[in-house]
Image (cartoon, rainbow, N blue to C red; front, side, top):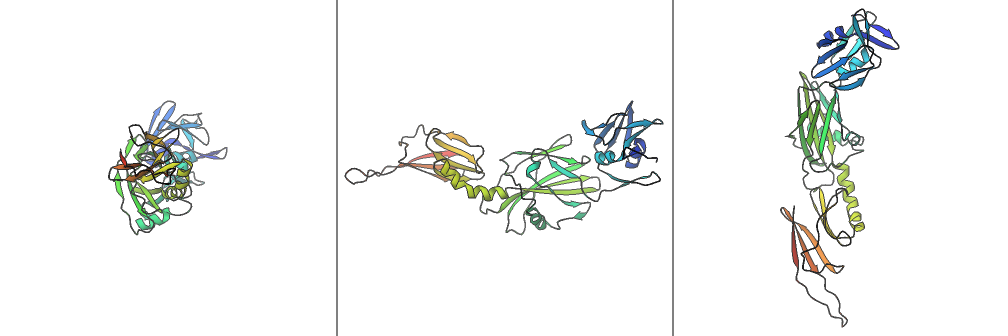
Amino acid sequence: MGAKIGEGDIFVPLRAVADALGAGTEWEAPTAVVTLKGISAEFTPGSGEAVKNGVGVELSSAAYIDNDRMFVPLSSIEEIFGRTAEYDETGVIIYYDRETPYGVTLENHNANFAIVPVSWNGKTFDGSDKALWQALWDDEVTTNIYRPAPAETFTFIFNGPVPDNVTVKSGYMTYNEDEFVLAEIPVTVEGDRYSFANQPVPSYDELHSSGVYVIEAKWGEDACRYAFITNNKFAYTAYEELEERMKKLYAIDYCLVGDYVYYAVLGDDAGFHRMLIDGRDDVKIRGFEGIETPISGSTAITLEPKDGYILCEIRQMRQYQADGSLSGPYPAEYVRIEL
């Protein structure tokens, strides 16, 4: 097939390129529409932008017509369809299967996560789930670990063709475990975007523990697994900072339940609060109204997690009287906070 060089770009005939890719081509003058494995790309002569699945994509150079054939920049074809190609002096375009997997972008979290491709076309980069876990503990991967909220939504998109099939699995383990189990979780598909909810976190028996998500995708015979982690940096630093955070809030007492810290506080926002352990999403869940025991600086409140609720013990502390005797003792009052 003929190719032309202009302004530093290699231009190739769109129809010939589409045929080499095994793609379909339709003409809706003056626009050409090329479709391949879930990708629909529209090219218009004179335009420096193609439209990929309804979204504008900038071309390295504008497409043009010559001898009733549309020419497009080769580099842009590679980018849009996720294929590699070579051009030689005979003007032949040779398309190769990719040796490296397509990338994945977490659209609403990408600055916080590093995604590791762990296998591609039968080539395994990790060797085992244990090796995968060790790879995900690499310093570069854990630099910006972010702790997602319960049921927070992850949305991702592939930097290449839309796969024929996508599944997501989640697991959780501590640093000292040799193996961990991945379980498939529900995925919502809207066009080329995939979404899933952050999964519940087990108890923090081990500070160096993390959640793992593995995205598995297939394009015909091509397949890839990607992985990223959550929780690790969060769990460690949040626990280190929690006691100081409670002191700043003048909490009377607090306890941990899953992702949240529950605490009691006096002052303008007196009552019982629930807050994500990293300080976000602090809400007052109930005040002290309806409690018969006087609430003041001499009131002791303890919070104890139970199965499905928190038991709050409220007791007036004994005070020394003028004659040196102690007041009380006072009976305890109990409040139940459902989880």
